[in-house]
Image (tube, rainbow, N blue to C red; front, side, top):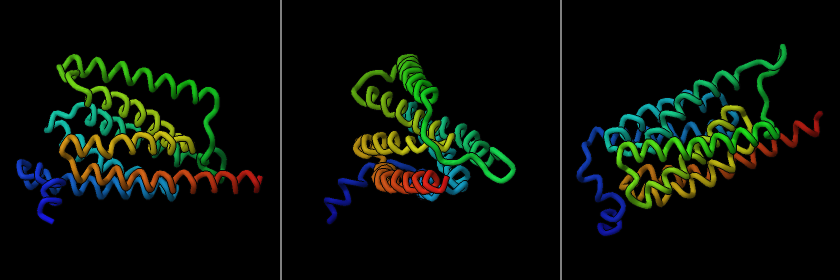
Amino acid sequence: MNQIFDFFFTQYVEYATVDIVLEIVAVIFGFLSVWFSKQNNILVFPTGMISTIIFVYLLLKWSLLGDMMINGYYFIMSVYGWFIWTRKVDEFHVTPISRTTNKERSLSVGIFIATLLFVFVVYKTFEKWNDWVAYVDTITTAIFFVGMWLMARRKIENWIFWIIGDIISVPLYFYKGLTFTSFQYLGFTIIAIFGYLAWKKHLNNNQQTV
C-alpha cells in the first residue's frame, strides 16, 4: 500500500502544505465547474473562475507556462461565457445550446493554429521548448482554447475538444508531478462524455419540439 501511495504522491514531499491545499481546492471547484457545465447551469462560470485563479497562481509558481496560459484564458473566457449564456436572444429566452456554424468551424481552426504559434513563441522566448512535454503542452493548449471558446458560445462540439484534451492531460499532469490534477482530468473525461450526451439529448428534444 505504501508503495502505491509513494508512486502517486511522493512528489508532494517537496511542496509547501499551502500549495497542496490550494491545488485540492482548485480541483474541487474544477469538478464543480465541469459538472455545472454538464447540467447546462450558469454556475459553471463562477466555480470555474475560482479554480482557474488558483491554478494560475500555482502554475506560475511552478513555471508551467503553458498550463498557466490555459487557465488564464479560461478565466477570461468565463467572463465572456457568463455574458453569452445570460444574454437574451428575445424577450423570454437566453442563448440556447446549438451546433457550430461553418463560420464558427473556420474560427475554431483559426484559434487552434493561432494558439499553436502563440504558445510556441512563448516557450521559445522563455527557453522552455526543450523536451517532448513542450510539444504536448502546445497541442493540448490549442485544443482547450478551442473547447473553451465553443463552451462559452454554448456549442455542443465543445465537449469533443474537452474529451480529447482531458484524455491527453491525465498522463501528462501525472508526469509533471501533479497527481491531484491528473485525477481531476480523469474525472473531467468521464463528466465530459456524459456532458456531451446530455447536451445532445437536450438539443434533439428542442429540435423535436420545434
